[in-house]
Image 1: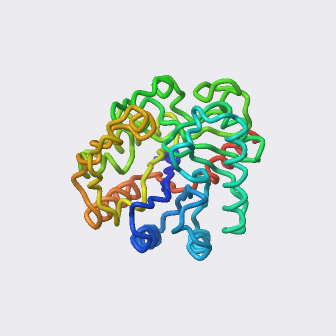
Image 2 (image 1 turned 90 degrees about the horizontal axis):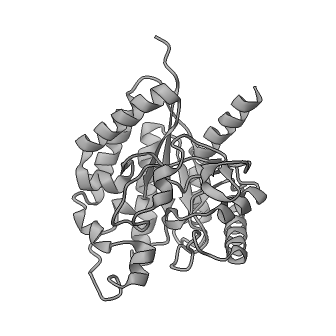
Image 3 (image 1 turned 135 degrees about the horizontal axis):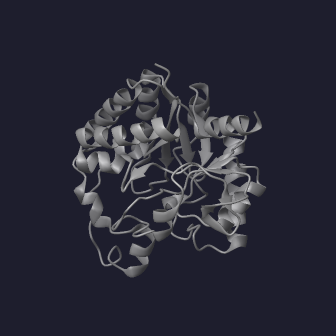
Length: 302
């Protein structure tokens, strides 16, 4: 039986996470890389340029083991909101972050994911100018109430398959030369936080739905996770600041982290089992975001 290849794009967001000790942040990258090496899975690490744990030796290991380094913004602090930052500020942050990551990794940086998955047509136009080939900051058909995006109506109507975005609307097909590669969702997003909340069996079920869709359409399955989840403790207290409208507008309702059932080693093991489950499916092909974008360009040329 001839099956369509099913591209699976495992993506990691490397945030600064200053509230976590540096040693734990560094160990989170080590255990993540060890797991990917053991499973022989190439992935994409979207790295915040100012993340202290992302030192050149770690970036070099990522590349040596077949992973791609992408940009996850400059600071990941509250002002870096690409859905509302002025254009000049966006350009400054993207330029600085790109340069810093290229210097630290000695490789071109060509894929992007915005902090907290907030983007705009301005962002994507600037990325295209700087030679980026792909962005992965949209989560099509994700229904959310408490995350940093709250209810993102644009996501609900964004194309499910990768698309060239419109120069005036990041959530519609258009003419920009880079690819928007959405994070997968079936109302429930295919992300590691929901693995912790709902458990491995549930997330295997989500994967089966996405796998069946990919068999029909050829769309990639894009999974989002954070290495820091394997070493940090998610016990941030509720304070007046975290309950303020400004904080919720940027970060969502922090109470969602109290729903997490898995912690650290258990989270890592569940992730390992989920990846192994994916790998056992016929036709599965793990690849980086950049490799996927390049394959689409080659297909359109041929």
